Image (cartoon, rainbow, N blue to C red):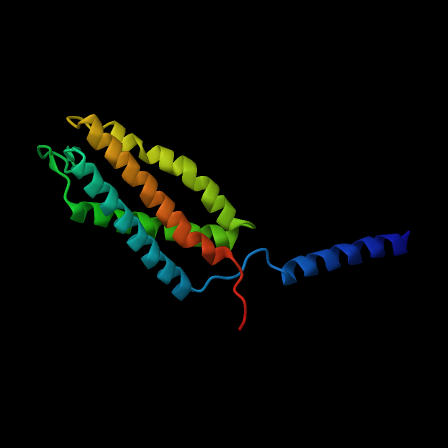
Length: 163
């Protein structure tokens, strides 16, 4: 009976040691994470500017109350870029924490991005004194920004090959 107990303990130790030696995800350096955050911000901003410009070209006024207590006015592109930068930084921090503290952080990040995107639709949908075409353009901007950020960050979770 003592040998059976000892065998169970050694099997558990071997399993734990093997799991510790083969991580599910690679470690991501701060430099790679910062580079990906920059890429994510650029991709999101370029995509949003393209959607914004297309929306304006086909008739969306982009007039909305974007500052609290101020009358509605045309949303400036600088505001779009600022929000994209903030979203990319927040997403990168979330991505880094998920990869560090969960077994499958990249997949969790990708799956969590969908309900987060849906929650962001509340902003455009609840804007008072805003045309439907402007709301639709804003929602399209949310979609392309989120997709760009997820696509820019996701490759960090793949193992790199030593050359």
